[in-house]
Amino acid sequence: MAMYLLYESASGYSLFLAHGLDEIGQNTESVRNSVTDLNRFGKVVKLEAFIPFESALDALNQCNAISEGHMTDELRNFLELNLPKVKEGKKPKFSLGVAEPKIGSHILEVTKIPCQSNEFVLELLRGVRLHFDRFIENLKSGDLEKAQLGLGHSYSRAKVKFNVNRVDNMVIQAIFLLDTLDKDINSFSMRVREWYSWHFPELVKIINDNYLYAKVAKFIENKSELSEDKIPGLIDIVGDEDKAKEIVEAAKASMGQDLSPIDLINVKQFAQRVMDLSEYRKKLYDYLVTKMNDIAPNLAALIGEVVGARLISHAGSLTNLAKCPSSTLQILGAEKALFRALKTKGNTPKYGLIFHSSFIGRASARNKGRMARYLANKCSIASRIDCFLEKNTTTYGEKLREQVEERLDFYDKGVAPRKNIDVMKSALEATLNNDTEMDVDKAPTESSVKKSKKKKSRAETAEDGEPMAEDKRIADTNGDVSEELKSEKKKKKKEKRRMEHEPEQEQDQAAENGNGLNGFNADDGSVKKKKKKRSKDEDGEDLAAASEGKKKKKKSRSENEE
Image (cartoon, rainbow, N blue to C red; front, side):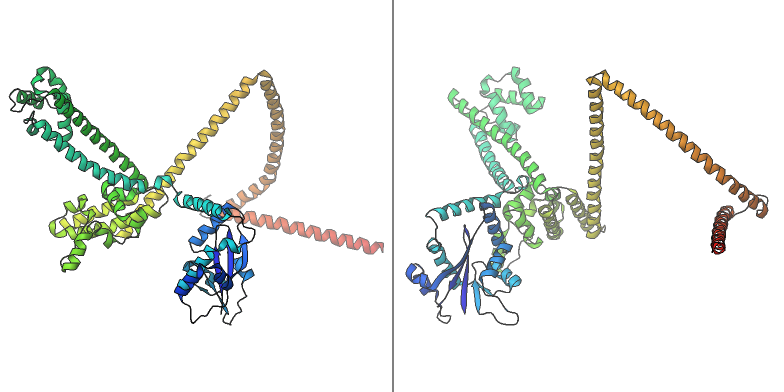
């Protein structure tokens, strides 16, 4: 059986014929050794056909299609032209070797050409790749490398280039930095406390917050210089007058040792660094909240920005999180405990990163596992909505949060929650209503813009000068004359119609007086309509009779003349 090899290079498609192969003794190791020798490999593999790409854009499109396992029209035409035709009902006497099994299955479905992809074919294609520049005539040295480099850059750029606002990598980096900042700020603030406590140990018991402690230590510096004059400044920092007075009194009777001015300068600088880090941590948290509202608004509305970002970072991306089933999402972050339980045949963990959610903390001890399972289910739904929905909306996340709240009430009080179908229907209706409201809001703005443009054009014409106004008056007078003529014609037509309808109305009134009882009849409208129709029918019959009489007279005249 003959074997053809399809090779996709950066410059075009090429088809090779591998002949003289022993199917029984196909040994990959022997092929691997003989591939490097061009004399031996050239006797077995020969070029059948080659079609270059039209442009760099065409090469990129073909490369993207092959990577996705899709056969383009150009590739199909190339294969049908250069391969033997497959007759229906007969087994083909050749096969096509491809590097990717996906593209092979697609070729087989569309063109019925048998394809194969195994180690033997891959080794042959490796030899083709190695000696490709020798097979193609008139190919200059360096052209193939330039084409590969250009295609590689454009392909990687196209893969990376997508919606900038939906980049979940920024969220992963931000949550990692936030966690490390928390650890660093905690350790640095403890170092400030320990360092400054040698000078003013009583301050630790008065102020518990790390950021406030660093701020007060920077403000006080030397405790011996602290007096009642600095109480207003302490009140601004601490926010409490009693605490400020307590700090001043504690400084007067402090048991700490004195520090040299150089030591105090170092303590002050370090406290300033801790304050800067804590302020940067607040800004980073605000940035994370905004990014989560752009990337995963429903997940953030359901479980919170920090926990949602931790789930995304642990899964690797939002798409990976959307692919995870709810059972996997439930124990994300507790892999060590899971494998330990499987190894020791103990109880598996009930929750991982999801435990940091407020819902599980609010649930009772016996219902924490149930709550974790239910919350993981809703989180998987929210992540899939965020991943595959084009418009950013938080309605689904808010409705799912309501469901979790109802489930908590069900566990605590026994109140039956709503069904998932009803909740999703209400969420869909809410999103549709929001879309319609947005469209309605846009419409008046467009009309106002048009009105403003009309006003501007009128003002501009008025500013241009008086001759425009005179022309308008002349046009207006001409228009008034034409309108008067039209109105006179309309009046004449109306008078004719009245004259025609007056005898009919008199007949209808007479019929009503004759048939009705004292003018009261339930079927007045129907009687009038019927009588009008009868009168019209009678008029039509009279016209038909008159036309028949005329025809008879004409016939009789013609006979007499003959």
